[in-house]
Amino acid sequence: MSPVLVSTYSAVTAAGVGEQALAGWLADRDGANADPGVPVGGLYDDVLPAPTGHALVDFDVRTHIGRKGTSTLDRATALSVVCCQDVLRRAGISIDETNRARVGVALGTSLGSFKSTSDYTRDTLVQERPYLVNPMLFPNTVMNCAAGQVAIKFGLMGVNATVAGGPLAFLNALRYANNVLDRGYNDVMLAGAVEEFTPHRAWASHLTGATGEVTSGEAAALFVLTTEQPPAWARLAPRARILAVATAYGPGGDGGAEQALIGCIDRVLRHAGRVGADVDLVVTGESTDEDRREYGPATRALGVEPRRLLPKRMLGECDAASGAVALAVVLAGGHRSLALLTGRGAGGAVGAALVERMSDDGPDRG
Image (cartoon, rainbow, N blue to C red; front, side, top):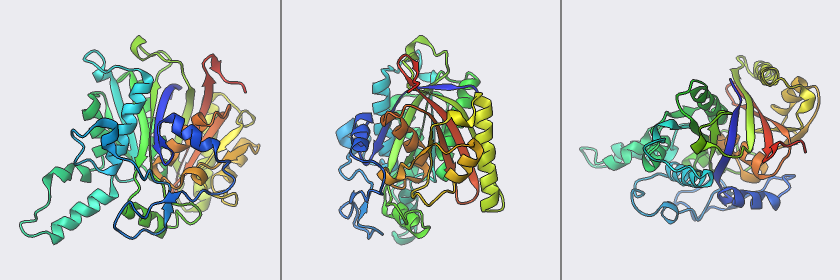
């Protein structure tokens, strides 16, 4: 893959909407200990596995985009639409007939909205015959609902893709978006990921042990990607450069996954023409210092032990959106570094991305 530029981004997280909210949130936290989040008991009538979480409890899509067309949006879709509105505003890209076919979306997810799918399926069983389900809610049950609604709302007619990959979803979406740009199908790709906070997801994370050390969270993040030679209407001062992304699968459990992750890191370093000593920040999907399922293989591949950043301690377990949150934290936190982002799924899927943060004048040398 060729390097791609990140010109700007937006993130909707427990911190609020946009980069400024996220930067303020991070400034108040050192990440040394897990933040329990905020009380979430008032969000739903259903019982939740924990009294706190990293949810945006006062989020109302209508306050951001108005009432029109919002009555049937589920939470994941609403988060994505608001995030897209903010990132387009920040980028200053005006979508019109001359460029709408050149702007696409690649969005990572676990399985779309778990709540929407579950609730709709339940309705087919408990409502009176002939199955009085609400047809207006059916679009929410498909995995690509959020990416599709983003394109409809803002008139984006380029490539539109949803990539389901659990903790690797964002890295997979980055690879997908890069391929689209590499082949010249689009000039701009909005690449990111989304995960909602609902009782269904909170319980799923709780029962699988993903929230043993941190509480459940939610987020949507989108990054504006271009090639290094974008058209004039999309030319912005770059914030970062994605030098390389690699994903793999390690069969056979822990050892296989570790070797696969080491292989991914070797590949991104080689592809970017860098060595392990160049990396000064490793951002992982782990949540405790003792958990080294990603950091351990990373240090063996790098040959050094750079500083480790654990975004889940500050923003919770965001599952498919974890990688996107990690990149947003790197950019919002002002980390002047060559950062290695890693991801690892329970089934053996692994991935790594090498990100060079840039200042307005070019690569930031710290």
